[in-house]
Length: 154
Image (cartoon, rainbow, N blue to C red; front, side):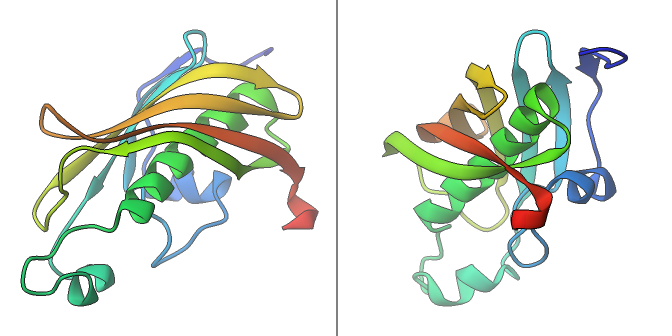
């Protein structure tokens, strides 16, 4: 990793969309708050409002964020880390999700804090240990694997 800062303050949405191919309504990371490439860690967040399309149909009388979307937000955060850590010319795509557990509901008005720690990085992909928090409560945790693919394949 030549000429790469190992610790960064974060990224705004404009910087995130330079890495991730996702766009509204599937971009589920509003901001990356910290990155440490040497330690292999990243943190981001998603601000949730009642205006999110999924809240309109996912238990409208008691809206909660679908678990698969919490996992997607974690995967997008981890994908940024794998991209930055492994091969900046390729895109990290979801390969697998293991040991996923949902522990606390995510509701409108919550700020979903997304944290990933690298388990493995290579030229072909990577794996992260991921946790999503609402405040100090773990909402979801999983191990997420990625494959790195050429941008032209997407």
